[in-house]
Length: 192
Image (spheres, rainbow, N blue to C red):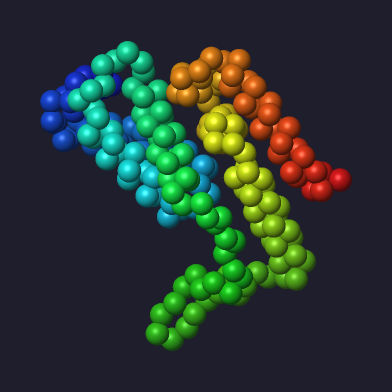
């Protein structure tokens, strides 16, 4: 099965191997979008699972009026937005005291892996900056955030984003411009 349309048609008829192949073709992109949108590995996995459950349930209704990827990413967007609305919580930075390895005899913490004080300071600054960027992205309105994540984290083209979000390219450009302006304002203290 090398043709995507063939794979989809077989999956629509209940071929579980064909559906698995579809999942395999797109799983990394869906997980990446979910992780970029929620900034939490656990949340991203929940979103990923929900996306493919919805794809499985809705695949029989897919009519090839758009690219399969456009349809799939539209579902991903909707699940991300729904998940975000249900779980309005900020992800927290892992503590330096968090254990990264444990057995009966010993425990290794994140702080144990840091070699020097200068490195630790740089690590904390990078973590703080990263958290501030993620927090700023989380303040964006849903549509702006989704367009921003797809453009800057997933590298999609404006045309692809417009198709996924079912709007014109000018709207996407406006979302991206407004998102960038808001982020610039939110992160102003870090650029000085």
